[in-house]
Image 1 (cartoon, rainbow, N blue to C red):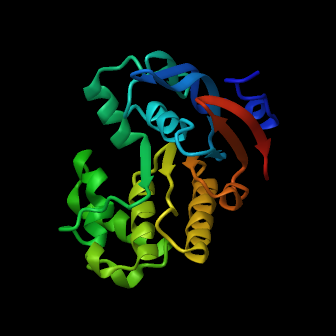
Image 2 (image 1 turned 180 degrees about the vertical axis):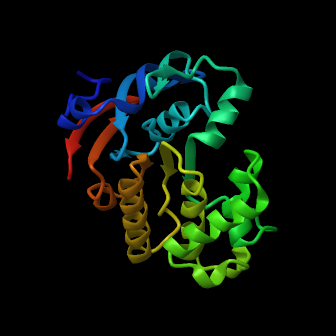
Length: 238
């Protein structure tokens, strides 16, 4: 049925880390989401594909609590979160979610290690411990020599690795990635996607990645196609 995601083996084997039910979102006369149901379990990578304006990014933003749905529910680990106050959703985004965006969204005035440590510091972590964790993740992502580099001193691929380290350093249960390779050449994009998927599988974080690149989407556990605000198909890819 359009608007609903077909059941898969993955959905049966483990409870979803995050799920959306009957999600509807309108922007004026345009219906961006038209009753979407989706589940993403821990350790699973779900790629959302579709044409421009199909509702891909809106779905990600609604699940992440960045945008409020007009109708429907969002659940994290079985608990409803869409009806929380903005303050509590903001806290949830810092503690339970990690984000990787197309342009990295790094703070230009902060070094690589400070960018990675920032969400932990905002969450009240000790500065020394946050920087230690940041260096650990930068090491994991092949940036051991770039702790003190500013974003403007990094290549596009290096900057996106910093963004991935920032998204993972506080050990989120769900990682949201919106066109994380959109500004990169195909080879670098494939490398970044591989790193993101491998580490999320290792940490058992759930990942929801919006991409226009079906070759990159094929690297995910499951590819979900959305069109006109409705789920058109869901295919196991791994």
